Length: 513
Figure 1 (cartoon, helix red, strand yellow):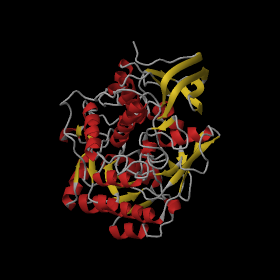
Figure 2 (cartoon, one colour):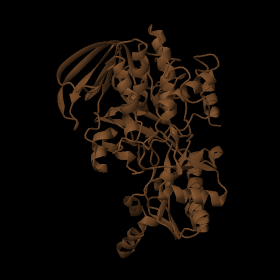
Figure 3 (tube, helix red, strand yellow):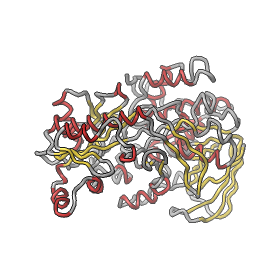
Figure 4 (cartoon, rainbow, N blue to C red):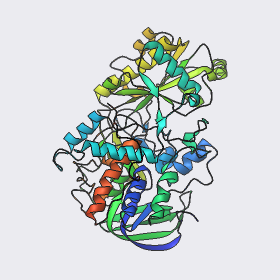
């Protein structure tokens, strides 16, 4: 018997708490509230990935928000803002990377949220990290073993060591990883501890009712309603839910969009402001020896040498389409494709200082505005230069490709520096974002339990609740914040919060520096 259902027709439900969204945050909200003894109903627009998609195109249509076409607008070219959709959300299709919340980030969050809670919402730092350790234990987080490093991972690891740059094997929630490199299509072997495997079934066992194919279209205090859809988005009924409390866990884009669409918040208020995107920029390198294309983890190695400059480098899969942004044509392109197994790729992720905004829908899609500031533009130039150094000086690359509009291939660092001036036209950037955060921040838009300051009875508990940019892949931070806020909400609603793990289980609380 499934732990979820796919209703159709005319459906009316009643619950103590309705949770909109069944991703990284919604799963922990549902688990925490249900195990606290509250009647919980979870609404998810997507479905469980059964059967698993067999191609990237199918995965994008079925399991990514807006068919993977969700983008931001602003002074730079449109930037893809990728997110998952389904029972498991982005945990279905991410690379399973797990970073602890850095201590300095948590202190920044406390400073930012001091107005609603003395000392900040997470003033008890050790309690926060104890919750994080329990989250990681539930998801079986561990460093990627050496034998699962891909060819690309090994190339980056060797290059970083040669340069004396600090780096490490990525920590991932993939205890049964086979190294097939298909994380973004849903793990075909069940090797990833996504929340549809580890958290949602446990929430259902505690009494949470989990409904798939529910596209929430309207909200009010104490009510949510919308369309029942099939896995292609075609309507097959309507639903309406009455609840004492509404929790939005639809993500940093979906949550403020729903609130603005419903007219529940000030259109010029805090909800939707403060959007961080953590733009990523790829740097390719054609290496002279050894096949880079070899099985292994999707993203198994991280360089953190420049974390004080708000950037890290993570290995990225090299897609043939990326070569289309380089100035190769005809037979030259054919030759490059023939040597594709020797092309390495690193992605520089920045902890952006720039901010964006999410408003209501336009023609059914999210309205995302993001303006890239000068400080981040200069930082991106340094990302491109340092990525080039990694391959040129660390791996003796024949050439380095900067993934920019107009196509640029450099054969020396001098050429790279000429291609990335401090006044680089932002219209040349080809950026990618999959970590939107901080659009309904605790302390700014919500109180210490995630409840909206201007609309009590509705809570925002997901990546939107983060007070600012984590500076790393935020999966574990989102889950930890969801656990902490939903535990407070459970107590506020009269529930009795249960431990995530039996006493003595899980790792000792630690934190990144």
